[in-house]
Figure 1 (cartoon, rainbow, N blue to C red):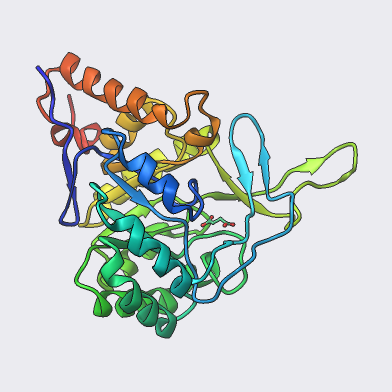
Figure 2 (figure 1 turned 90 degrees about the horizontal axis):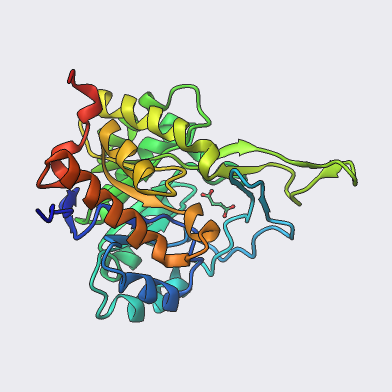
Length: 308
Ligand code: SIN
């Protein structure tokens, strides 16, 4: 048996449930094209673009802690109108959906960005969860009325799928996700990074130039599994799982918790084999399905909620 690993997220058909998470490939068009040739990559989410270009924070912006990455890049990006030019050529001939991650600070920015980027994307992921940039990300995402306003503006400006990426750094992520869904989100991506910091004990100083950063990678995986599990029961829309997927087991765990698709991020940076990590994960998921007697990955979405 050769189990089918095609999935559908908010109307987008993905040849594999594995997506490239936002941020990992930077905003490079050539890397997006390269990763899209891997048969186990179902979709790519771009680096988050903002209304205005941002240079990002000074180095150090990333610390490798072994069990995860702590980053505070500061959302460096060329700004949505410059990025549009790059995306136009990237999307031409791309075999998989290109999901553009946007980080608006209000509804006017959201509307302008989405209208301008609409015909160079197959969908949007609204980043309302970056944990360390002033007046963006979580500063917006923790405020229900701003979430509502921005998601409504995005919804009203495109007919394409709208995913909203939520934060684990709020007390009530379910209400947060519900607000996004009520405002028109088609799916929720969970989770963005967990706010943290690291101190250099020799220098006796915080390592990141921004002091605080967001933790991703293996350490956050159980947090992601729990949040996906809860969201699956509490919201009526697909959940895209993201957080510390390094191997097939991590991907299957998120799917059993309720994720329709799974994003891979830090593993790309950590893996010895680079983008081949998608083959390792994808083939592993197929083997697991075969072994368990399933013909399709869709059959195992949310199965951890049932009595067996
Ligand atoms: C960053 O660019 O600082 C990280 C982006 C994010 O966490 O959303």
